[in-house]
Length: 280
Image (cartoon, rainbow, N blue to C red; front, side, top):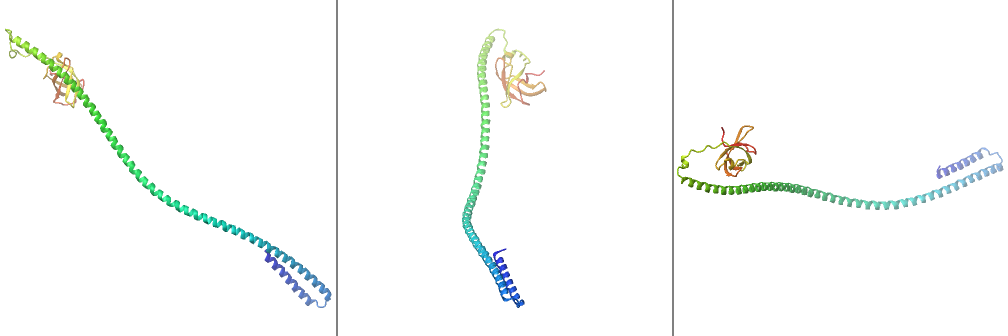
């Protein structure tokens, strides 16, 4: 029960006592007034004592209430101070958050720009790699072509040296043959070449030693020792398939090999293809 409720209860009790006293005085008029007075005085003192106790309790409750109120005010002031501090902190944090949001937006825009630049750089890098790979392939192709040309050049140079040597040897043989012919023509009883029946050319068979279909040249393993002469034609064919491949006209000769130009080509000439000067 609150302090005000207790005070009201005491007052109601006092009023009830007073009303009872009045009623008693009205009803008991014939009693002895002195006895009645003592009774009333006793009741009054008792009521006064109860009032004093109630007032004392009220004052004590009021003091406690005021002390509690002062404590509450102190707590309220402390809370107001803390609230003000927190409001300041909230404002600071709000400003910092807005600043962070601004910086975040700037970073997002910067990252978007960097992503665009990165995509362009990646595209350029891929393009450069493609160009580099193309250039490397072209370089490799050129190196291969150069190597092939160098090999052909060395082979041609070797063929030229062989041809030069063959030409020199042929010149020596021709000069010797012309000298012999002139000597024979001066001998009595010797017939001229147009008066002699030509000796039949024997059949020759061999194999292709080397071949270059692009350059249209080939070399066979038959030479001057086998009776091969310049201008002689050989027929090249695949013996397994019995297929004609090309015709080889001899223009360079050594002791055990001869080379010439391919013509009437019907297939790729390969090493170890069969060659002959005539079919029987």
